[in-house]
Length: 201
Image (cartoon, rainbow, N blue to C red; front, side):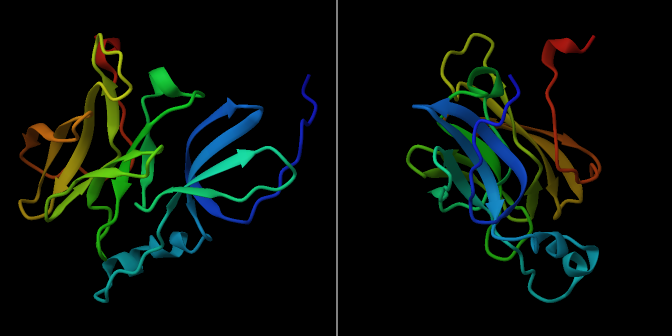
């Protein structure tokens, strides 16, 4: 009917991306790649990114907010900092889910790893190669797959050592590399990606 169901108060935070949301046992569960504050915006200005000093960056937490009462404390689902999160939307959007894919940070470098995080255990699989900077991972389900992670993960990766880019194909279940499709130049670094499959002519 459009009426406000409840108002919930949580500690302040900042986020670019939410991961998933669903109802469970009368609660609304919301998973978010959350920062403690908005200082990450200044981290992404060109001057800090081009600076000669050690790259300092804010880190996200994969947090779960369970909205039940008038206040809520977040639960940290994994210790791995994650951004640009994607799930198997076709099967798990607005439903309980187990796996989220994203980009992550290692040491003091820019987004230089891909992650598959199990939100039920906090465990993570990692793909990383020196000098490679992946874009948002896109999950593509197997045509007749039934498992949540049955399919592949695609990411457009900048190879800084070779000054080229390639499309990386990972097995979504094992998170191991299947193939690369290289291009002879750098594809401008972007954050988001899509897969259209049979929708294209």
